[in-house]
Image (cartoon, rainbow, N blue to C red; front, side, top):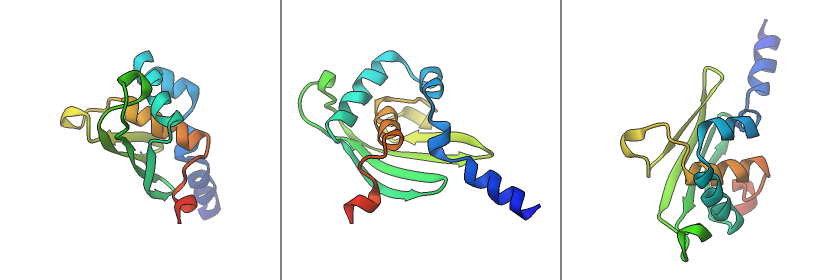
Length: 120
């Protein structure tokens, strides 16, 4: 029984939940474009990176919005009951909006770049 639980826990990761389908269902095309620009310019700084909990500063780049410019926001991804939850400090009233900052962090996780362990 314990082995089954450990195997299940190991299989449900933030990375495994960040599929293309998840992104398409939870964001809008403009946030994919702007988030991709933030990611492409390296606008992610990891704060915490552990199983089931990832936090990062995202954004804060100069230039135009199309280039990924805008405010720097703290983004948190967690897993609760096998479901992905996210919070961006730029979202009003902590609504579950998968904004451009969330997209940028998701792309960094999916493509395994800018990991906290790389910054040590």
